[in-house]
Image: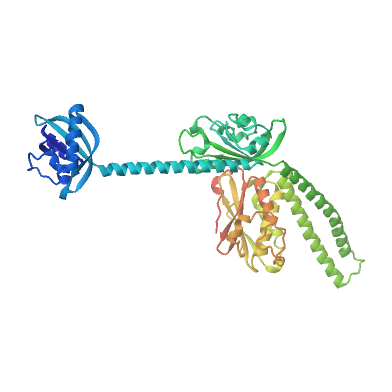
Length: 507
């Protein structure tokens, strides 16, 4: 490529003059800007400048160039097309062109430089505004964190060392904030064994660096003990969250929120004692009343009128209902406090299901609802507490018959899973409202809580089923059905001799 071709490819204007300022060459960009042609030879450089710029060229620019041989970024007005004045940023130097001494003039429109400088000033102003906003937000966040005096909020590094502690942490730990910084959190908290290996120096070892499922492992809530400066131990609830790194060298890796639950534990203990005491005090006289009623009704020597006989039956049924409510309250209290004892054993599932079906044939018999067991599984061994499994089945089957229309069918199906069997109870009832599904297994919650609801209940049945199922090592849930509801639960099984025998028709 020749020198002239190279100059023509430049995006800026280039003029080359001899030492007498006569124009030797103008590249294509210069021709376009200043309206000159290649045929205009021996055109003087001064002719391309307005009068004031010509004087400045002769009195200042040329002497400077003669002295320094180079001029950088000098403002000079040039004439453009139609003799319009164009402020230009000029770089000039001495050199040679086609074998003779020359002066090279490189021209940039000054307005581009001005626009760049204006944009630079604007960017600096924006950066300053962002910095002020960030500092303001930091101060607000600091004020909020320090204002939460009854909750300890800590930031941890990747190795579990404390890098930030709010005023609430200082109060709860009974230690100054600056003393807590850089101390390992395990010196203060009893970290569950399953979480101890997350505080690693190698970022690749973090459980939260994999899939979304792995990240959930690092979002942990647990209760533990906090060792404070006075050598006392506090019951606390801890929320541990992993921070997604914005940069690879981010110091902060975990957020820890610690709440003192000492009072809650005390209130829970008082509540449990109260429930147990009241339930026991109610159960004793109630049992005596039921026994007396049964003796009275079965005593052949007793002469009761038809009205009295009817009232006795009503009293006995109400007593049984109250007895069931007391049992539910006691069971739920024991489940919540972990005081329930399970007698796990390996048993055949099918006989238990058939027994539960037989026992419910006469429940709400006037509705003529049939219970069918749909499965081709010959039998399967499950590891359960028989009494508690019957309690789960009784709750779910009684609900299914209670809410299904007369002369309908309640179906029970089985589905094989790798280490469990799924039992589904399908009814033909009205189903569950979508907004109530999240509350379905909560205690004392019913879809219809009005006083005039059609069916009585304590609102504890499904909550007890959930607690019992989880205590047995299974899960429980609900799914909508085209013509009713499906309540399902899983039970752990022993490995069958032939895995292919676990099959069932889900329809």
